[in-house]
Image (cartoon, rainbow, N blue to C red; front, side, top):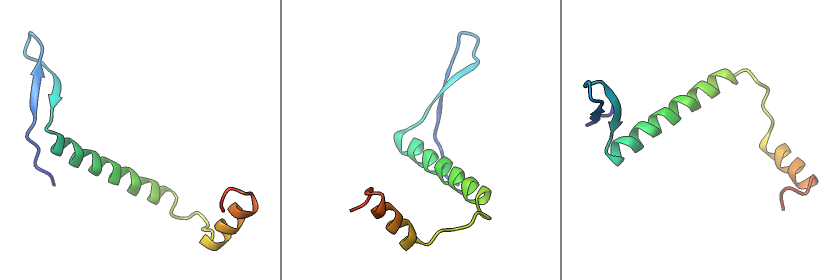
Length: 67
């Protein structure tokens, strides 16, 4: 778990309207979100049939998409 030191911007009534994060905290948070999205994708596609890497490379070369 990352430790975040955030600051809030509030409107005239004192309701939070925005959050200000340091760049390090933002980048850490972004990495965690991306990792969570990757895990979700992997779980959703876990049962799909795989294709050997060599076959993919051969097909790409045949189509002229890989030299």
